Length: 444
Image 1 (cartoon, rainbow, N blue to C red):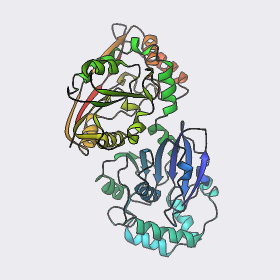
Image 2: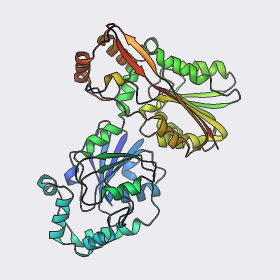
Image 3: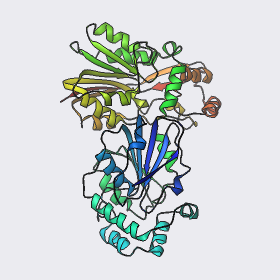
Image 4: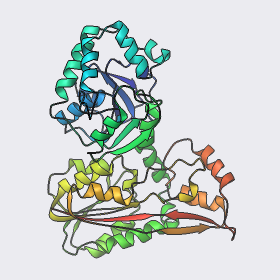
């Protein structure tokens, strides 16, 4: 495989994008994802990839289109040591030639055996590539492309990484039948997004950016509001207080993910005066806290080394709930527990449709499906907490002073639109809903 860094901003995080068969990096040279460098991978004549360009990155998001998902899955299976926190697949399957779960075998064989310049042009038209896309591709080597197809077919029967987080399936895909994609991915734990359009997605970069959290921005926003957070976050304090009541009395080795200003940390010290408590935060206010991304910190810890992982109002800023719970399960001792609070889809429901950038909150059902893969006992509850404000300005001020506007850069336009379109209720006040979800998870 070949790779090229096409967008470099000095970030410590990278998106590694595996393009489709018969495509190189040319059409993707303008791809950017806020908070991430972008690396494009292509040419699947072999599935070896030099990982030294990735050594400087603390976090990696892997995205793949079409048969690039097979190459990416082999790469992920071969390199479990990489700090990959999110995986996204577009119009793909890990069964390249399969009548039910891939490209029908006869069509795959016909493409391989009849490949020539003319049939390649026809193939690219069928995948939805316009003139602008094809003109940016390098010269086609037909013999190499045949070899790549043969290699992809062989690898599809091998050991592949299969725990993808998000899968996008286009309704008008004329390369891999959408129903076949569903038959493959419906058997997995991936979140499936049905979209319109052809095999070539309209805007891959924008989709990746909508899922990959800009951790630099999160660090900046929460760092800037550390002095105002405690006075403006009563809901988060209430959630922390409820979470600490679930903590067992006999735990000794504790990691708190997302300690922030130390509200939950202080409660933990009161409840567990003899425990060793390590607070971790991407932008901590506590002098003794570990300054690190909580999604990555657990990856550095030994197996079965903790009695408790606890996190309050933090994991919604992570790239992958599945990856985080897998790491929690790995570092916990037998019989140990993870206690996590996060927010559900009804959070900020009053802002829907008003142009506000929002997080893709994970719902209770999905948390349960993920958790049961790693934990023996899974208890999940949720509630709704409403805050009221005297005006839209006060509501927006609350959001700013608690750091939860750390979703996207350049939010001034969105804020102005919200102020214009937020409508107070009959009492002249504005409501804002929080939808806390509590996870009490016990390891096998």
